[in-house]
Image (tube, rainbow, N blue to C red; front, side, top):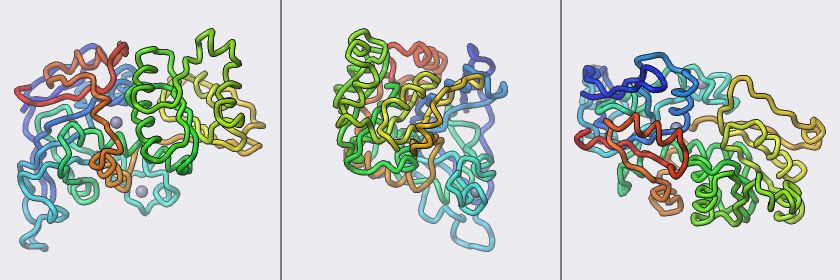
Length: 357
Ligand SMILES: [Zn+2]
Ligand SMILES: [Zn+2]
């Protein structure tokens, strides 16, 4: 089978690799769509992964094979009872244990099992092995969803979890900083959750226009003279009852964006960091904002609970994720996909497809 193998930031090659072998309870998935995620790009750019890695985790595909039946449970494959060959599914790549100290405090992405469970070799591969835990707790049938919509379920789950961690309530207002594919997904999520006002911020005109087209009530370029002459951050607060937003969600890895976000929120509001900065990055925020109950939190990854909700959001049309796709590229075009994504410009979501590579 073919898989896209990472060697260095400028060298990702599609090569022949052995088909994964299955253990009891595991499933072989023929990948039909895999989204290129911002975290894939940052892992590539920051060289956070060893040479030989196959990236990709936003997958949807067909079950083509199931692992053998364990003798203790004749007639069924553990965890596979709900599935059969030919089912169209989406799957989460990490599954928390829900029992450890991290899980009990809701920090699922720090859980050891979460880190250890993974699809193999990675979504940018013709076929992947799904471990039995992921089959049992992280696999959902697509039903009426297309494969490419299915590929959005994982990312949408991450967005939903961020809003949950911020205790976002229907009728709340939000400023979303960074209108890349993830920021725009947050925008759709804010609408789906009943936000009363959504302000989009970015320095890229194309992305601001897209945000307006989708559902932003207002699109702001924080570096523009116009914005600064009208009072800058104070104007953002003015736009939201003169108080500021309940939540500012930062989906760009720029420290200044986090500092600005603290000026957008109301007293006691929440700033949520949803992007990786460079390890050397530092932010300066007045401790008094925090003393006056501003929350500065982060959110990373998602759990099976969000997966189900997001699948239903997409099915019901509440989350029109297809509108975020700007490119559908073949596996053999993976290097082009990475380049396009790094160049930003007019690239939003890229979906890798697998028809004839
Ligand atoms: Zn992702
Ligand atoms: Zn755990």
